[in-house]
Length: 368
Image (cartoon, rainbow, N blue to C red):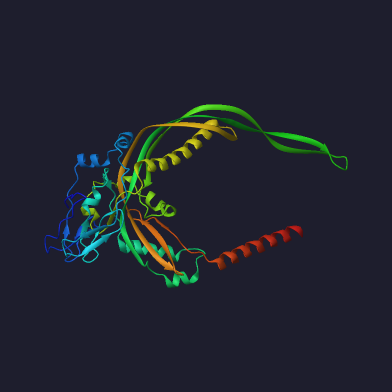
């Protein structure tokens, strides 16, 4: 299978001229009409090395790259059937709405200075993803009983290559705080009957401390698409970066491809928040003792590097009680994150059962 650039359309079937889509289970193009396949050409080490290369963050910020305006909805004419397909905002490639031919909005893609340098192809196909959806739905605890009877498949869905950033960085953090060391103190008192009673308590002694912590961060993944809600973004985080390959329109054939909506600088701010949480944990370990107080942390980041990559997800929706719920499935690993309804009756019954059990235990203990 040739490595057709993302801004071009993949080849038609050599046998019948039909539309070809990427088959996740086979890892190659497959004709949707006659079933003919197109073998994949091996990728050179140099091409893969270029795809996986990381880029200097400060240099691209100076070029104002990753800070481009939004991509408006596009209308793309299909060269196969002549119909027009309306692309949603930020979509730069998608199947024709009528004949399913892969379409590319080249003008829209050119609005981004930073192009995807690598992509992880789909390994989970639509049938497998829908089976995972059904399995997840049937296994929901405290869901309304009617949900499992009335919803057996998603109402709609699509496979999408969502844009992501990965960040590397080094940090040096100067901190000040206090180390708490526990010791046991025994107090002796005389009770109302004149007996000596000893009671132990824990006292914490605090000692001021300061120090320096250095950390390295590698391949922190930040989702750059607004299509996946933050509550479901963990499904994307599960993608192994070892799956990244040279990007091509062939792997995108039959799927939707998005351009980044979260820019380079705000994406790094998200990564930085995660880094700072890990820095605080490292500071607490460095302080030691039984307890820690962190008064201040001053962190400096350097050697910041990034990659712009595409990750595969299936995005489904289903309707329950006139509300649309969303489910996201990782196209590489099958990890699923989904919105779901809860049964108030089941939760109330559980709470009453727990309360009754607690009351029974209390009654038993009082009557022993």
